[in-house]
Length: 363
Ligand code: MG
Ligand code: ZN
Image 1: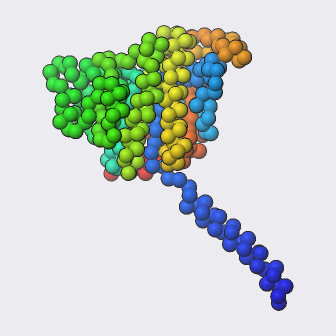
Image 2: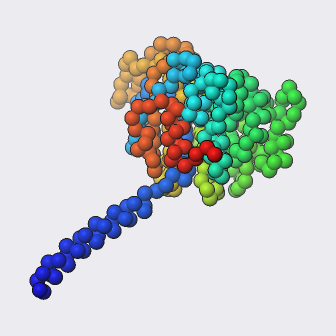
Image 3: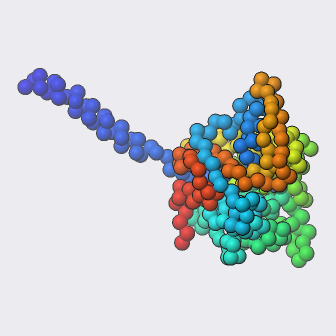
């Protein structure tokens, strides 16, 4: 009798410990509370790899455990523009090139940012272009044409967006209707900041930070660390939210390097974007409930590598067009839910996956 118990006891212990391990594991799978979506406009795999090769140190983007690809074609064209691809990423709907936040039938579609607001999450937008430009606009505005910048600016007042940082002050203040939308935002409780120094002083509340009349300068012409700093400031403010947040951060000008067929422009902008990715990554590593997704809206320039040298950190690039191309673009994911982003899928699935992970069903 004694010996039997002696043998049974460790077996029972093992069973109990296996059972409790499983329970603990289930309970500690972290929920997705925050999502940081970073879009490198025009950043295909060639742009990303050129920055990796030319950098003396590994990129933050190389630290992501999950990688996938998404297809960028729009409703109207095999080659998308940033309005249709931005709309696909933001709303889950393919649309016609040029359209912002609406389907091909011109019916407005709610964006992931608007759904997040409906569910009480804090929201933000950061860009190095005007904040009214196609990519950020797709997350907040609903207009038939991406060039309707003043109408897009007015759409910022139709939402409860908590933080936005970028260029495009003129679209808010020097308008055909002579309204001053910044004054209006101020009466609604926004803190207006004309510099990142001012913005950094804000400890809580809503922030409208427009840093230039139009686009921000290129990185090589003195934009400095605007994008990584704006990312840090926005994340600090949104982190006050107890219900979580959604933010889209854009490296807007990688695309413009592609249009210019300038490898140097492309690489400088991609490296700057990567530093913003680094800020998002370190936030997510500390937080544990933050999903970080990095992707592009399309490739630009048809960039390929026709030569180079790894040891010398040198790439010989060749551009095949001054416009966008139809190739698939990378998706990188880190944090809870990251595994959902492996594989090959449509740009619209990026929206679906984020919506499902945040439990943002439309009412
Ligand atoms: Mg853009
Ligand atoms: Zn472009």
